[in-house]
Image 1 (tube, protein in one colour):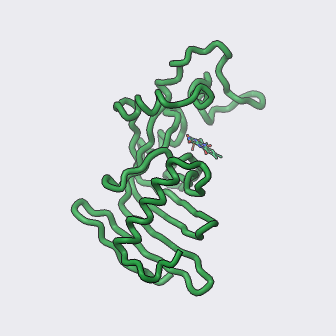
Image 2 (image 1 turned 45 degrees about the horizontal axis):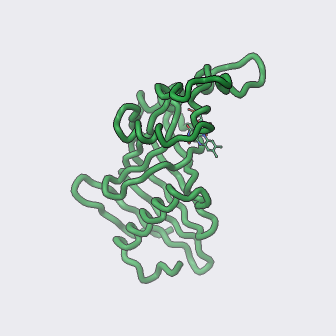
Length: 193
Ligand SMILES: Cc1cc2nc3c(=O)[nH]c(=O)nc-3n(C[C@H](O)[C@H](O)[C@H](O)COP(=O)(O)O)c2cc1C
């Protein structure tokens, strides 16, 4: 993409459009996001599927199992980061912000209702994710599990963005920009890459 004539505001909107596209298309590289939390003062990263985004609210969300260790991280230290990279357009996006869990809202309920039976199996295993097992394990539920079982383990993992950093890798010279999402405005600046 030719970004040379874009201003910071247009670019900011384009980035959110790309995020929104990645929510609905699993073929988009940004459909998978690297999620960083803080665990006992050390960084922890893992891959999650991007499930939703709101440019207006400056937030993105994923789905997770409430029993997983990352949820304990967030309860103790909500600060974290997200990382996206798309090798097709060579856009990297780094975000700083805070995480919160939403397991009870109507949005969470409707997200659970939209999950397929196969996706639900991730939330229906008897053991909490990350707990030790005496042998190699899949932690799948029994075949006759109730379809509604596992709802109590399901949560939206919401990330509210405070800072966004865009990097475009180009042979003719890289480009970089950053935005701070303040309560009343979004303040952008170009950076030397
Ligand atoms: C391609 C891919 C997609 C994944 N999607 C999710 C997801 O949407 N939600 C999730 O909780 N874990 C997902 N995982 C598993 C996480 O990376 C991680 O292993 C798990 O959530 C446990 O993380 P924790 O121990 O830090 O809590 C995915 C893993 C891969 C490789």
